[in-house]
Image (cartoon, rainbow, N blue to C red; front, side, top):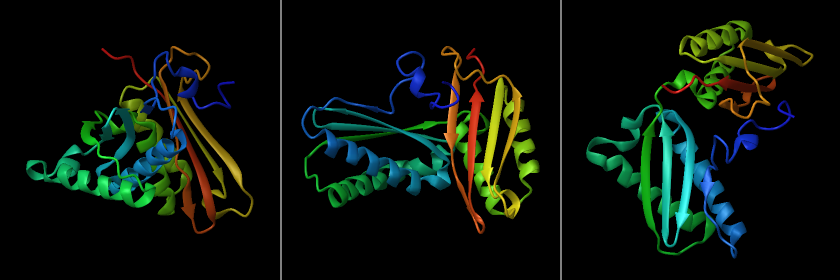
Length: 215
């Protein structure tokens, strides 16, 4: 089971929580579409700041967005000007893309990521970018595993699949170090996939990281 299900899904309500937290009987589809556009726009706009995750929490006439980034200074800006620009951008985009004109209180919080080498999304993104630069896949995977394990992780697994290195026939490369127990619910496993678009086609990049215990 652990091989086929996103590790976060089977841990929801146990050691993990939902990325969107709200309840709405009517207009569920519209709110879900709003969340989708919000995440997509923020991940694109803040990619240079090393954004890894966006959490959305809704209550009556209020919308709280928490962005987890590795470079919070780039988002906040000098004197908080960056946050104000981001608020205006979000409000305008929501009205433009979803047609919603409801007045709501928008609260944006920026949370720093302590160690980018322990974040599965940032590791997968880094591997994807290096593959785009045509660096050797084996060297990329080995370097990524060493950095993750050096940051204190209990284990890491990296899987590449596709026409690796421009090969005529697609193949699957896997590298693992330490333990990554996907079916052990109490194990804090983070997972991310970030495909790399090369000239020869897509190469799938998947990363599992067994997080160290918090002290």
